[in-house]
Image (cartoon, rainbow, N blue to C red):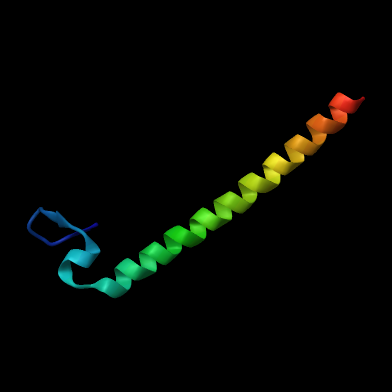
Length: 56
């Protein structure tokens, strides 16, 4: 959100500025993918360790 100088807030795409809104949504998707990759890597490592621990 950005301020319009009158104390009211508006969304970027409400003013017809679709390029900044599209750029922000691309950043959101890329951040989501990055977090997902890190999460899956950690989950895989934890699962591998717990399986090897359970086997003895």
